[in-house]
Length: 259
Ligand code: CO8
Image 1 (cartoon, rainbow, N blue to C red):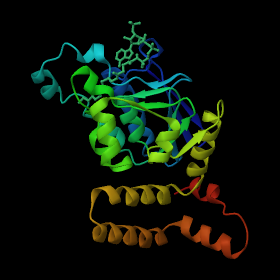
Image 2: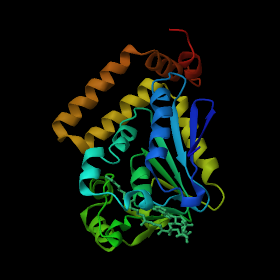
Image 3: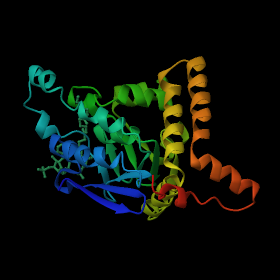
Image 4: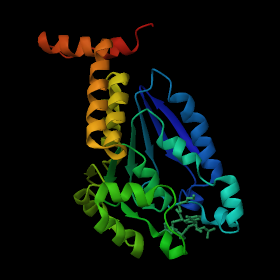
């Protein structure tokens, strides 16, 4: 098993599990992960995915041993690692909990998630240049959007690593947790996201993603229409009614209600 999957209520905890290769991402791992998550992505009982590695490494990048012997033709014919686009496109909100190395494809995988929570030990890098190549799983695009051109160029052209603190200050990471607290805090975030009406979190992340993918005018219209659309959902009725009645909303009753 290259990934260990566990259901914790409305949260799906995904542990990358190739310790012998520092959780390097190979084709088998990618396919195993996608096979499971594609089904769970449309499960109304699932509210959030949480991806993590071990205490010392999140993932050391794409598997260099798998890639090394391939030709350009092999890479193009296989459309090597195109499957990760399908991971990024999963609609369920994704949290990455990163401790230790998140290098190359590991850093790019974390950036495909909506929230990155980092342990103090986390180290982020896109060191592909040191292998004579360049980032290929979205790094040049996502890192630049997240931290800006100046720092992205620095990291991508020198291959240097960035500490959890610098990553937080730069906008790559959402929160840094104290030693030993990573999984607990990341799970609390995932459970909180998963506890809201699923349709609302899906709509919210789609609208935020529009900020990267469209101009302001189109993004604002998309956001407004999505907001309008949520008025057809029981979550909006319950959430607003609970506010007016000065009580906590019972989204749990709505989410498990028979359709
Ligand atoms: N791929 C394959 N095997 C790896 C990888 C990797 N990325 N990283 C580590 N391993 C293996 C090592 O080869 C070693 O195996 P063995 O026991 O058989 O010799 C084992 O894991 C342990 O490695 P180390 O002894 O190096 O472990 P350390 O804890 O000392 O160091 C590091 C950990 C710092 C993470 C170090 O292993 C390292 O620098 N790894 C490579 C990091 C790297 O360069 N990553 C970028 C890879 S390229 C990439 O990610 C491209 C993504 C885009 C692809 C898109 C295609 C379209």
